[in-house]
Length: 152
Image (cartoon, one colour):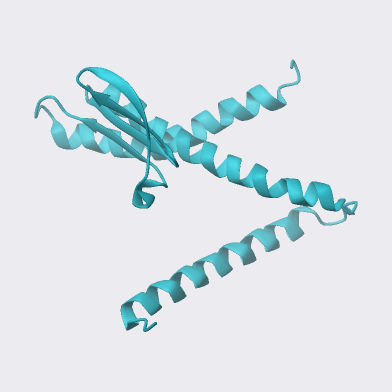
């Protein structure tokens, strides 16, 4: 199999970014854990981290895309589609329908809301686009508060 130069550069770029992320994460963990001895984890707990990580990624993607949908509805857009991983919700003939997402390109998530008119369209699209970035941290904090609240 022959890999062209452009594909090779993309792969190298991704590997460099993953390595940089690992280095930053490791350095941050070492910095914040100074003087704290962590007990070694049994192999069962180490193995449990993998599915928890997968679920956490899925939830993060879902919250991010939900932020786009909420922002779109707030600026008067009409909901059309919400995709996260293998799950798809689509508006067809005025009804919401659940489907399986079979397109791997959309596996990372997509929210589609469409404007009904052209009034201040650029401004409204800016709000729609920024909905994911602003919605995810807010919804993450809500979830964190519900799970780790002292009242629970």
